[in-house]
Image 1 (cartoon, rainbow, N blue to C red):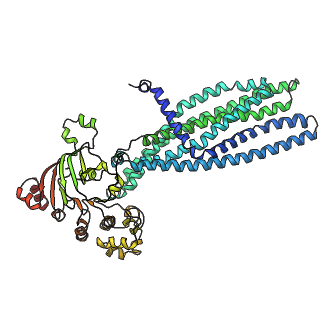
Image 2: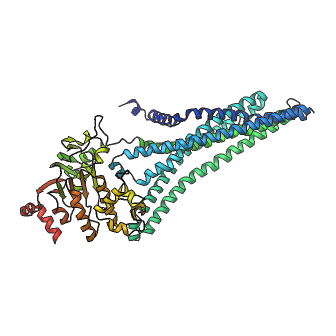
Image 3: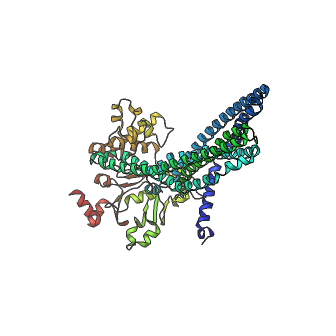
Length: 599
């Protein structure tokens, strides 16, 4: 066991330090502006310390001494330093905002790029709403820590040390009386820190749960409406909102207790200075201007302490967000290109499955299972598909048909065996150029917000409009497109909501036609369309399947019979293979499926 694991506190400390270094690394591209920003912070902090001292000097050297020139010079110095403070504060605020906006942009892009690299399995294990929360709420909370937090920390520490030095120089006796309040402030701050840490972490978790529920409800609104479950979802949102309110109320109680307590201590310190300083002025030990300066510096003394305590709340929120963001960024990308992976170039499309076994369960879950065979989605698959052949995968639900399709596209890697294209393992090729030569049409084609033309050209953004129109015509989509108000430029809405399911599927087929894939995978691609649309698609399929390797997952006999060969799966294993007539004559598993479909 490593030393870190033996000492979990040390491990947590090292892990937190690693995260802080990473956060500071986000500022590196803007280091010149960061230097200027901190220079402005130093000047702003320094000039903010002058007014109380100058006010005291104006009283002692000008007003009480009857020296008009000293009074005027002090006021001029006051105005100049106040103007300098305003200018440096403007520069500080502008640079903090400038840097913060860009760091926020960089951070969001970094997280989004990482998400884009993740395998399909990652998205099945993580709710979209939680990922959206990482990209929005958590990044915003972290940005507050990076921009405002660092500047607030630096500025207030400078101000605090500056005030302490000035107080000691003015009158160390009065300074010691002021510092007597510090132990009480320290105890109060430690209590606040202890209870606020868990409270702010809980608020991040509650808002993430709300975001997830909202995203899921909006995505499944048709199902909610069709089953009349609006009240159920409203009640669930009420529960989540109540938990979020309760979590936030904990922070409200803490803030409502802590900050008035520090205000009370400030008042006590001010009263002590007035009492003791007043006596010293009466007995002629100090000048009245010194007491006035002390009163002014008291606010400057307690304000940084309060802001540093408030900064701890921002720190807790930011670190809670950072933990969640790092939980995402530390998730390893499961499907990666090998160091020696190559661009496949133009592939022929020959497919081979060599003793392929795959499970969605982890190795520990498979080992814990009493029936280990039940843990394999597909097991010991040996199958050769020559280039240009169309193979239909047939079997009952859960037989492993869609899993094989996901393995071919390398959405997952098999735990055992290998899949080869043109005689070389999938890992030998770079993923993106390989997938560009694969066309996948799922049961329900997904369309993005935008026009029909933009959706058809999704795989080839540089395609000319004539090519887009030709692809639409090839699948028989021209008829319905021409009836739309703006033709190919018609907006389809989010997820293609403006089109019927059959029209969405035709657009999905046109999208595949335009990319011209060498390997085609149809996963129940015609099961959600009406008979007329299916006939239109079948005509397009004859053209689409020509000279391409195709894996067709279907229950409809018309699609199955079009295949050159039928592969029958049961519980993840191949149990039969052959043509339709051969399998019917064998009177085995496929024949029973066929009889069930036709009766």
